[in-house]
Image 1 (cartoon, rainbow, N blue to C red):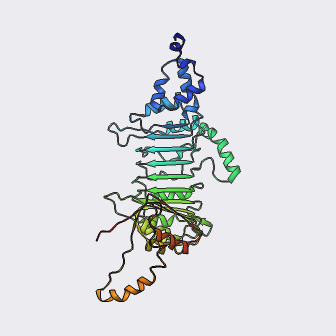
Image 2: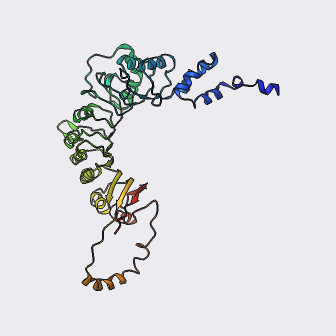
Image 3: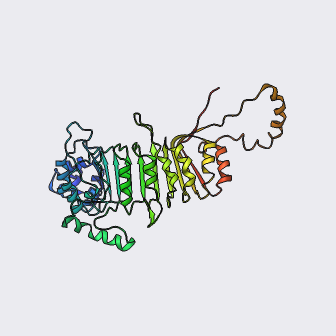
Length: 400
């Protein structure tokens, strides 16, 4: 019994202790490192710092970021999530160019960066971010005018160039794209960024590796801006966002902004675009132009109201479509025409003749995963090789 009381965490192997510490948040990890010298050494193990999420830590300042970078963050960091001071009462500068340069030097494997409520207007452009980034997600951030341009006002220093030299060398050998001074981001997500305009969108055409672009609640993007950036044949080859394979446009209905219907810019053709996601108020205008997308293979519609006739008309020309997905969609039922009293007796025999033939199809109980059975039958004729996916969909019930 005395031996059992004497047992504590010091008797556990270090691998098990690291697994236990992995369930703690960043703030709790820093506190755990103050227990003893052994725990301080274990807390600095890079296996605990592969994915760092600081969005739940509301009191993070630039001073805390420097402490974390100097004492804990290192070559094991893959994903970093930060919460800025844009909605904080204290305000102040959160991200500085010096801290971002130090981050790129000490964390050469960082590939994903997520910024929430961060004021980026103090930065010159996106070139101050680590060159190893492949995914950049901005939500509720403020951007300067030329943030996405690749024109650097000053050349990169030696430390930054050394940290990304080996990674850039592999990229140039594998694909022949990118340079030491270019942006290598492949996926860009903009969620509720009101300062993102057509000028920022035009700057993205210089990104040679951008293949996925998600625009959610970017109210200042217009149809002309999207049309000017479309991948189309030019005098020197394919111009615009030539390597874009996935595009998402969605407006969830924020009040106080005029609807620009940016999805009308899809009518420019967009050569090479294979996946399209439309949501909210951009679904209707986007479906009108979806027939111009000759290379489209995957279409996702989410958070909207649709009718069967609207879907069938839009998908009639999409012969190459392989997957059609509906997410949180409310289907509007087909309204049958009113029957005149004088014609009711003449049409009744015709209905009774075809009643026995359609009793196995039309009178089937609707499936929970397929709220609109007639839609599947209509699309099966138009798109026989296309698979349909319904997720959290429902049918609107109209009372008499």
